[in-house]
Length: 432
Image (cartoon, rainbow, N blue to C red; front, side, top):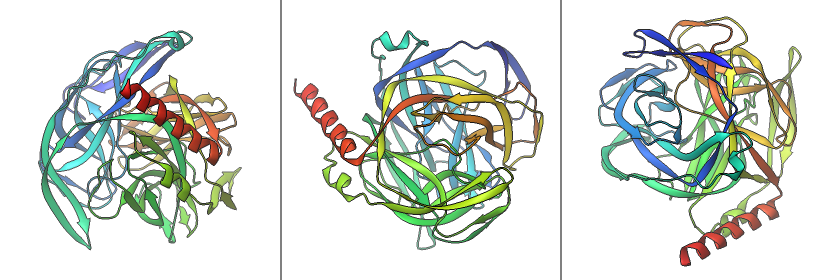
C-alpha cells in the first residue's frame, strides 16, 4: 500500500511538503533494555492553558533501529509532553534520527524557561522485519551512548514553584515485560468542556520504585482521554517511589466526571532487578464507576476489579491509523476522527509510535467500537486527535502509527511467579 506522508519542511507550521511511502507488513523484536534521555527546553516559551505548544528542546540524536515514547508522570508544573517532532524530513525506524521539538500540553498558563527539564524520552532498541520472519530473528543490537545533561528541575509544592539545577545522566534499565494494571479513579466532581484540558484529583495511587508508567492506549471514559498522571511534590527518579494525586484528562465532548468515575487505566511496568515481593503483596481490589457510551447514550456501571496484570511478548507489529473522513481542525480543540476499521486481536494491547506523523496534531487514544476486555477482539474505528494547528484532515491521511503487541493476562499469584522467575533468570545470567 502506498500513502502520502505530509511534514513541515523548514520550521513547524512553515512550508508543507509530502513524500510517498510504501506500507509493508512490518513487525519488530524489542531488545530487553531501554534508555532514558532528558528533554531540556532550549529557549523561553510562553504557554497558555489547554493550548498545545511546540517547545524547542536541546537536540537529541538517536541511533538507527530505535523508536521513542515520552516517559509518563508529568515532569514540569506547567504541563506534559505528549509527543516529539523530528528535525526535517521524517525518517524510518531503521534510520538515524534527531529530535529538536516536542508537543507540550499546558495545564496552566506560564513560561517555560530555557534550561528547564520538561520531560524524558524512552528509547526502545528494535530489530525490524517482515511479519512472519521477526520471530526467528536474533536479538536487536544495542549501542548505548550515555550522556550527562544539566537542567533545571522545576516543580510546584504547597502552591509555590521551586527550581533546582541538577545534572542528569542517561539511565539504561532492563525491562521485565511484566506489568500491573492500575485504574485511575476520580476523587472529585468536575464539569467538562470539549477540548478544555482539566487536572482532576484522583484516589491516591502509590507507584512502586523501579517501575515506569504507561497509559493503556484506549479511551476508557465516554467523555475523554487520560493523557498523564501527576506526582505530588518534587519529581522522582524511576528508582524511587512515587505518589500520584492528580490526572490530566482531555475531554473530547461536554459532560461531567463524578467522584468514583474511571478516567483511564495505567500499566505499571517493572524494570531492573529489585525485590518486588513486598510490592506485590500490597495490591487490593479496586472499586470504580465505568462510564461508557452505548448507542447514543452514556451508561454508568459500578465495578470491582481484582488486582491483576499481564506479561507482554517481545514481538510486536505496526499498524497505520488512516483517516476515513474529511475533518476541519481547530488548534487546541480535541476531536474524534473516523479511521479505517482496525481489528485489534484478542489478548493484545497498543502503544502509540511516537514522533508526530500528522502535520496538524497528535494521536492521543484509540476509541473502541464497543466496550471490550483485553482478552476480547477489539474494533477501532475512531481515534482521539489533538490539533496543534488549524488545518484539515483529508480521507486517506495518516493520523498516526500504533504498536500492537500480544499479552498474557494473569492472575495475581501467577504475576508474582513471573516476576520472580524473570529476576532469578537475569541474576543467573549476570552471575555467569
